[in-house]
Length: 87
Image (tube, rainbow, N blue to C red; front, side):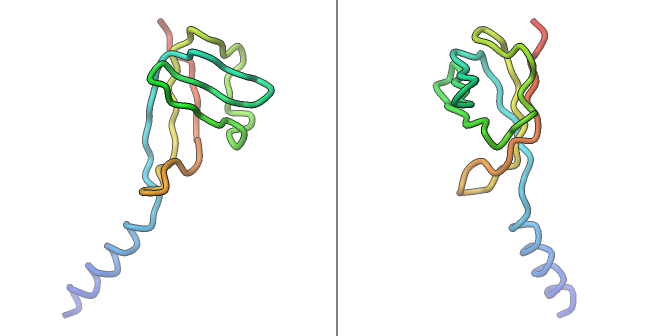
């Protein structure tokens, strides 16, 4: 019975934690004023909460990798890193 309780508690803790994930693509557009990034797969990223994580010199044509915490069914939680990939 204790094993079942421990597994249940562990499972519930893991289910509520954020999961790290990554995505990437070629930048189609980046609006520095509105803090909006559009990738070639037509995803639109609001970079307002990312603040100072946006690399200097980010522009259309760059290939980027975005690391973020997944919020499960709610989508993206928090962007943790943005990097421009070498060609």
